[in-house]
Structure formats: structure tokens, C-alpha cells
View (cartoon, rainbow, N blue to C red):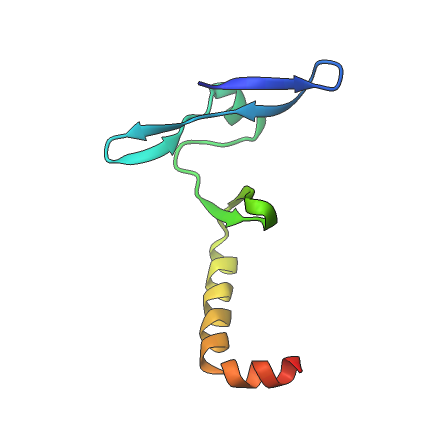
Length: 88
């Protein structure tokens, strides 16, 4: 089930897609139109981010950003007490 929701005088503002079982996994099927509009291709990678209020955001995967975040997470874990004191 892929459909476009039209709002504001017929302007297309949202595409509705459905999660589908694909083998032992679940995936999102994107139409050729959606792929072309967002310049996406099979194999593109994304980071899934949960926004406040439970919304889900797909962000193109950035290896440099991912490595930086891993370094930050290790630092936060190792120096948790220091960061707590600095936050006061």
C-alpha cells in the first residue's frame, strides 16, 4: 500500500508507505516516484532517529558522523561523573 496524501489545494505533501515482510525481515517498499524524487537507490543507508513525540526520522548515513558519535558515547561513559559535575 503506497499512496500519496494530498493536502492544501491538491499539493502532494506526504507519501504513505507500509511495512512489509521481506524474508525474515520487515522493510518499507518505496515507489520509483519516491526514489526519483529523493534521489535514492537500492543499497542507500540511513540512520533511524526517534524524534520527540515518537516520530521517526530517516537521516542519510554519514560514516564520519557515526564514528564521531561513537567516540562521544565512549567519552560520556568513561567520564560520566565529570560531565555531571560540569552540568551543574
